[in-house]
Amino acid sequence: MTAARSIRGTAAAALAGALALTAAACSTPGSGADGKGGAAKDSAVVGIAYEPDSLSPLLGYGKDGNSKIFDGLLAFDGGMKLQPALAAELPKVSADGLTYTYRLRKGVTFSDGKPFTAKDVVYTYRTILDPKTNSASKGDLDALKDVKATGDDTVVFTLKYPYAAFAERTVLGIAPEHIAAGQDVNTGPFTTKPVGTGPYVLTKWSKGEKLSFTANEKYWGGAPKVKKFTMAIIKDDDVRATRLRSGDLDGAILPPNLAKGFQGESGRKTYEATSYDYRLVTLPTHHKVTGDTGIRRALDTAVDRQTMVDKILEGAGKPAYGPVPTDSEWFTKGTERRHDLAAAEKTLDAAGWKPGPDGIRVKNGVRASFPLWYLSGDKLRQDHALAYASDAKKAGIDVKTQAGTWEVIQPRMKTDAVLAGGGSPGDPDFDQYLLLKSSLGGDGFNNMAWYDNPAVDKALEQGRTTDDQAKRKAAYDTVQRELVKNPGYTFLTHIDHVYVVDDRWKGLSTQVEPHDHGLASGPWWNVEDWTPKGAGK
Image (cartoon, rainbow, N blue to C red):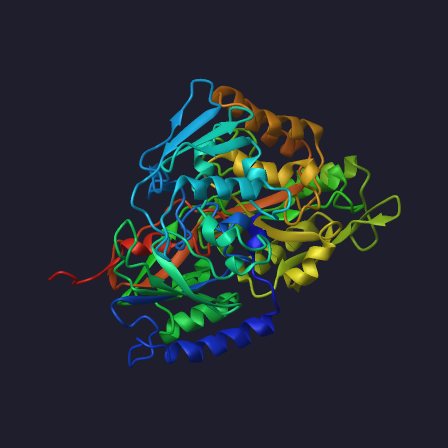
């Protein structure tokens, strides 16, 4: 899951960091007299909720594109269509789907002035596949057999099997061999002081506070008009809204109910981005209650998803029945689960969970009770967790909600439920394999529930190892139907991301977004293309 890139730390630390950054931003060169961090026409400060663990593409940073520091061979445009980036054109694919040939753009340099060549591409992909590299992208490239350079401007990828989504994997940023190869790939300075070919250069990373960028004036795509760009790391939703209100931020991602408070304000504009981002509850296989199929199926119908959409998301989203949104071509019709408390109770009765004296169900002396953790400061997760617990209680299941940091939550994930998030557009393999493959149980934030279903494992492999669309659709239909029979997660909602931004620039838009709505997403996905309003007049 992309939760692996979530922020860690306590709510107190978040508030302290936010206050420190408030003071810092007001004294930043280029700040206006009114205290706005982005008051200058050529600068912008935005508030985001997530911070990466590393800024190295060799460790997974920017694997979905839009990293600002790096470019991939390809990039997604506003409509999520692949376009050439460091490649001069889209790849040529062999008839058997096993060979992808990329011709590279000429005249591109890294931000240190060194030329970009095919050797950098080969180095990047081979390093990610190296067993010594702790890369979050390694599993994404399972299909890759080899990569080689043919001269300075051509790269040939050879696959083990036809993988329909391979081209989409090549939006991954390319690292400079002349810098990264001379240091430890997992801990070296390149992980925090990167050099790339992208539109921006990182000038400072204050962990837990902000990332500061300046425009790459020699960028092959043209020098950005926004010369200084700052991403303020603010975990707490309320603090982010307060800082936007005070003028300390030029834009921010906000929960729908907080964004609503800015509607109609002069000088600000709200952007809603559809997404694959879902909220779910993990139901760990290694817990006597959550690992019980009867409990899992009962919770699937006891939960009132539509009310969560209406009340928590203010309508900015849709009910989720699995990792695939209901409006996707990959969604399996007929797998919707409607809210039906009576059906949930019948499921529990049939599974041997009988009401106890206090109304909480019991089976073989085991009380239907389990903890549910959510991330401190995340209002959306908190609200989802509380609503879920309330719905479960009506069916006789006692869910005890608790807030914590990832340091507290992660060691408990094998047995304790978590209100988690995930989701990746582009291809159904991207998210489902990491979420559901049994062999990935316990692998960081992958398969957090330790879900183990042989039929799902087989279907995931079938969907991954063919480029036949009909066969792939059948495979992912099987996955979604199996999740109805034995849901290792209770999927709750798919969330539309809501952003509030000062209306000072032209060129803002949104893409279909993944769960990780930090650096790569939001109206700033293409900040290098923004222009100040009134420019050129």
